[in-house]
Image (cartoon, rainbow, N blue to C red; front, side, top):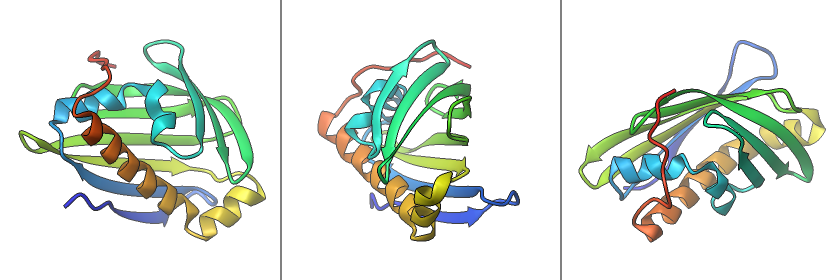
Length: 164
């Protein structure tokens, strides 16, 4: 239990990559969901994320550094349903990505978290990294770190329960 499982496949659009990973966390669905909505805590468990600023209920500003390449972009939450899912897409900036994280209760104290991302690796560093499976390893590692982060806390550090 608790192992991340995933897959990766190019989408129809050349250069775009889709990644899907799942992990079981030993907390109730509400705790897992609430913690995921605390975007400013992401640098504590997501490698490569330097900083996230919550600008509005639906807009975040990201600063990332991956393979030595720094990127800044905004992400807009396109759909958010408490305890079920959060979907986003980047707007402006240097990165193109969209994603969806879903939360499925396994039982009252365990949740399956599934992260799906579609992105366009930019520049030589990202393309080489993707070819070496870097993206898969990073997403899988981020989910494992999220698991440890929320399980060690035992509860979310906050939560936003609004609908988008």
